[in-house]
Amino acid sequence: MRQELGELNFATRGRALREITVDVARWLRGVHARRGLFTLLVRHTSASLLIQENADPDVLRDLETFVSRLVPDGDPRFVHTAEGPDDMPSHVRAALTQTSLSIPVDAGEMLLGTWQGIYLWEHRHAPHQRRVVLHYVGD
Image 1 (cartoon, rainbow, N blue to C red):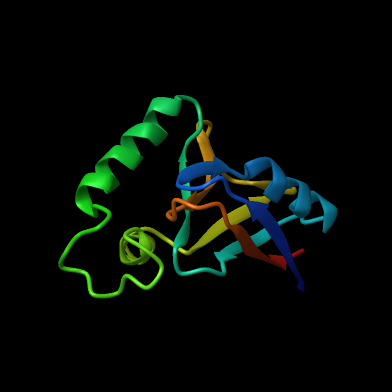
Image 2: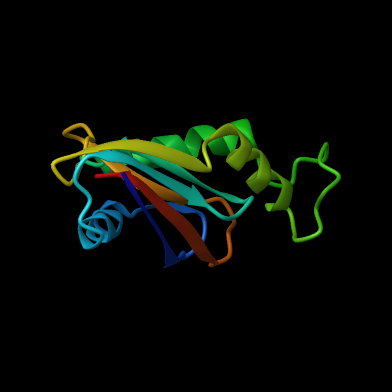
């Protein structure tokens, strides 16, 4: 059994879901993965990772609409506002979603469903540079 470790960097444009499936699959092919487990971790407290439908963009809009209602910017109950009204809501969004994913790999391919893609969800309004650690264990 072997392990591979890497990192991808993504520039975000502000609050949005960005599909990163192609970039992640390219890295996996580059390490010649065959069969094993693939883990991703976003190294930030105000962004998250998601496996979600990648066929209909309305799904992404609806997710953002729902979470915006659930955790509104500028909520007066939040004390932590050091970086603005989206600061604490971004941390709550990350806590409610996922900062890491584990995906099985077989024959060098991630075993995602037909309509599934991997997304980096930027929770801040301003653009950021986000780092995603990739770890593969297997053949």
